[in-house]
Length: 474
Ligand code: 6PG
Image 1: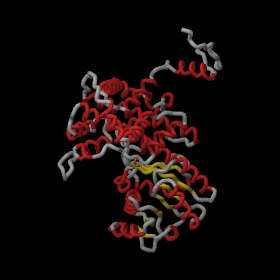
Image 2: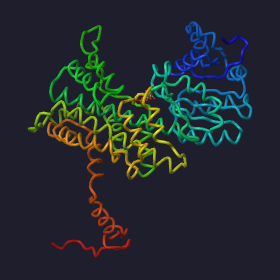
Image 3: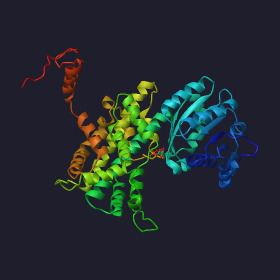
Image 4: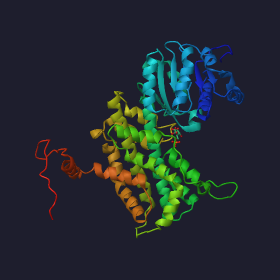
């Protein structure tokens, strides 16, 4: 039981949806938490609505009051819009902080910003933690998955709180310090990239059923409900089943049919793709999902396109429901594989020493992409990945052997039916590429050498050969 005069263990700035739920979660676990927000009305409203938990909340009007309300070393969670607002908030707090205090950015931050802030603040003796929090509103309130990057010593100061508020899987907290500086935010970004791909794959199968087979939303929802009992079991499939069967109270229609097909995006998916390319990788299933959201926003143009290019369906064999299920599983494995590959490369590049088994384990509960597949992924990473590729791990390899034919059948049938499948076809193209020892880049090298004398390796040895190129005279 805490007393009103007790100092708070932790502070939290930003009482938006995620911040207020996280504060309530912390208070409920018995920690006294000092809260503040830019608009002061929100602070009073929040504490007034907190019921019994209010006894663990300390309302603070500004940064100075918040810092004063905290025990040392002070640890302050910042949960506000990414970018400049975070820098401004840090600047407002700094004059009131002492060496050894800890600032924690719990928003979805660009990990490059987190690295910069870590370095700048380390120079001032302040420890900075980048904390990825996944699970949406419900997760923040009752148990999110938490991905930490920052100094070990600082993490140890807040570890009891983090582990108490996190989701649990088989009794283990879904929270871990994954490395220094931007490691936590990077992993959260890739989590969101995989989230984008998984959502897009689900939407593509929904599109096949709705547009290719004319099935009503609730029937599609029932199918997803069934799939959620098998290897596709996951939070995203579960909510999709529920969404598709929900009717609009006003019109009685399925609500999904009333929603404009223009998807928003706050940036984490795009960051994943940008970082993938910067690291010389291609997370193509994720990229396709980000791109599909951008195309979705071009609604007027798409409507014009519909008139310009009327349907041109060709005969395509009907797609079996069992194939749809398998194809989604294959695409999901490939998207995870690309995400894990990206984390592995970043870990080497930034010297993070990421433990990808731990990443898979802390994603098994609380976060948006939680799924039974993550158990298999954690076990596969534990055994070691051939060529650092998740898709080559024995368990996932078996899954892909069982599902790759279905992925090919679904994608090819949709292509013939002129239905777009950006993420699933991107996943398939990556898979087919990675299972061919001999590709076609020999021709690309020849072209580069022809127009730019860039040189090429020969299979019979040597690395800087040039071809005897000449334009064909024929
Ligand atoms: C999570 C979610 C969360 C949020 C996304 C939505 O893990 O809890 O990913 O971070 O829902 O930011 O992102 P978009 O607006 O980009 O879809």
